[in-house]
Image (cartoon, rainbow, N blue to C red; front, side, top):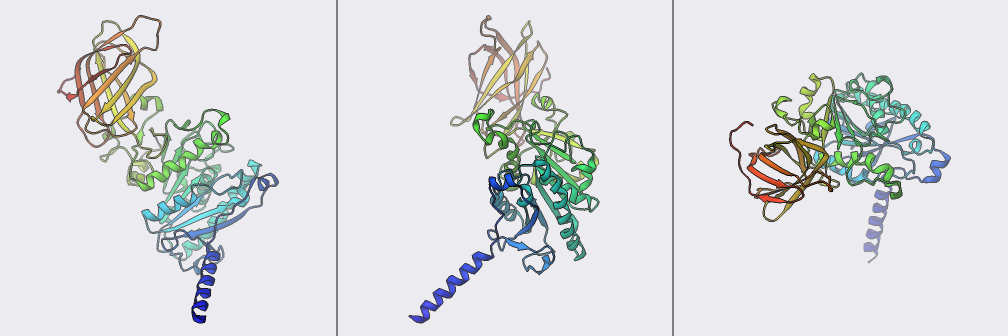
Length: 450
């Protein structure tokens, strides 16, 4: 009995000791923000051996930690401005997704003391100091034989520019920088030396989700993604009465979109295009002209298109998402030819059905012009992939309720799937009465040119 009690006591002491070894990101609150915090950078190491138990990595002697494997790739995860002092809600899941995807060192750069300050300009000043700290560590890694090309820096908001400053210190020899809605205030309009730019790494990508407020507006990388146009994100509140989510939802969406790409169960195609309007109009769907492999996939796997992207100056891409995970949408290029004597303007609602599930989209970003024997094209993005499509429903409206109702005579409508290499769906000789839904079964498209 005595031996058993001693054993239990030793086990409990061991568990307590292990718990003390696990480090957590600095947790502050609003009072720290109001008083201001001095910069202190902590490096939290995660590996597949310690997925949920961070180890503190010493700045002076990082290699004394046996779990820090220099022969493995290293990913630095760098947060941004923390006005309330709390740790990012996405941090734990992000680390887990990265380690599920690949065996690597994940180093969370905890600079919460320094990022928590009501004085944003003071925090911006600290970004250079954080970069200097990381530069010192990576220099030590380089001297010990680490391959700088295997380093991936993922920076959120101000963390994106910290990644850029760090990469510039190595003349762009770091392998990859991912900028998640890079901060705009104090960086918009600045020269490349004062912000992230494509020369800071071998491959630089930037995702824009809040460019009209907290994010950066212009292109910053070899490839820039503008989700839903780069500003307002679906599902995010549009009024200040929604509280703090009104300020951070669009900005924070960049992290959740990128995390979904690490999981890669629902890939998102990024379409190179000169503007969001042209993208919505279906003018940028020809991916074969970009590379033999087509348009790049957004996010973690975009590095597959690295060689092609490096041949270009900077590539601007667009895609649309759902308001929550799974974020991927399923697109069709819709081509319509009418034979009305007069030109009509209006909007379309399209519904797809497989007999059990339905997916619907309202094409209302602008009034479409339907001119006799002239093909009108538009992009239709559905929130789910309904296959096989057994029925299609169409509704036409002009948005002018007091005027006589119009009739739209379709010579042909063609829906070309943008994923899965499926055949186009067509229907010929169809009459649409305004505000009346018409349902039909699609048929194979004829080899005709109208």
